[in-house]
Image (cartoon, rainbow, N blue to C red; front, side):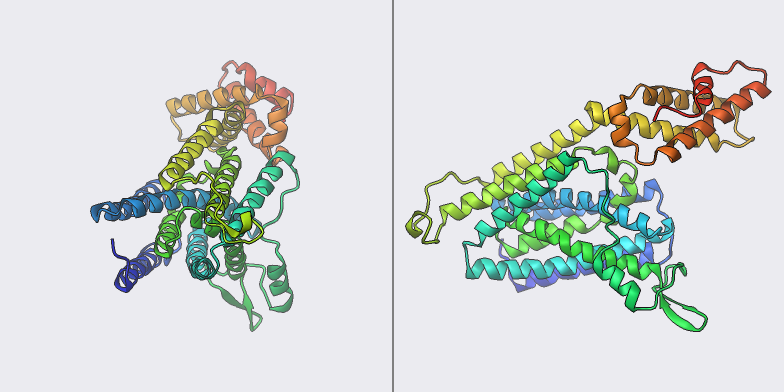
Length: 420
């Protein structure tokens, strides 16, 4: 498939059109998307990305097709990891749920712009100095090692991603308001024009996107050196990220081993880059400036390895003891909260089903080992209060109706909360 100026123009025009469509029809009017809406549009954007890769096959360009899919899957996995940080940032700024779509779309747009600049810079550097792959490879190995070290250290002090230097500086120098004014970036208070937290959270996410580019761009250049493939794989991995956020919100933190999987992928690509650099070596202090006879990793092998690592990561996250413990703790909190919100209009059948789910998962949570409870429950007081309130409500309702109080509810109330 020939990639010329016209190909670039059409591709960029399609991506800009998708962004404009997203803004005009989805986020211009503030609202919280339903699960159905998020699922449909997530499927549409993933479908567009997958179909785009088939175009290369139609033109008989199998190599570019495999490179594109390898890059897309890698960038999509890294983008999902980025959503964790977006969650922290928006929680730090207490962004109202209905305005989060606009913040995310800004982040995606900024990421596309910043990463395009990185892609062009990377292409220019590679063209001028092919041995830059040594640096790319070492950088990815360091990032993978740092990420793995952070996970193994299990540091309880979470970094406040929103509290970075430039945001603090903006707050100090520029007049800023502490309250939201709809989804406006500026507001007026006592006749003064002030920034709203909406603008600050967008700045924070934008700056964070730049940091993400330092691992995502070298990673994809480890799979393909074609700027067009790098750009399209990166762009399509970011498109639909907003919908994916709302679709898997609440499920993200169930991927307890995602960081390990991403560390493995970045480490694998780092090794691949260094092997590639050795194979095409020009540095005089390595093998006298001659190529080093090493085994290189083909792109189709890379695709299989990346997909395999992601499958193992997801399965381990969901079915390992730690993953099962997290599911039990989350569901105990979720179904207890739902039970406590039942009103007097709830039918006897609805109340019975709600009680069954609450009992099932509360029992499962009570059986979670203390090690996992300490590791996985972030806000113990809040967690305990939600479950205790639900079971207190259940006890009071049963006593008022002259019914027997289930043992588990009696235990929770007697102990003033679940085991935390």
